[in-house]
Length: 84
Image (cartoon, rainbow, N blue to C red; front, side, top):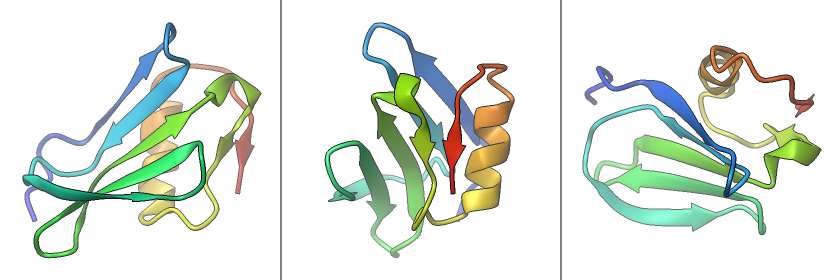
């Protein structure tokens, strides 16, 4: 899995954060409820994670590579409640 593109981006208008974990091509998206989506590559590895409605907090429970995702979100410098 290629990991050069690891980063998090916040879109204030959409109130969403996307955390990119790999630059591998995305083949499917797994929905974890209404506010979380996991993008997956053909080999099953996680390409990225999308969080919606983040002003109310970010739920990291059941998120693959949770520690990496939390670290990348922290680099954004936003003060958001993390639920783990």
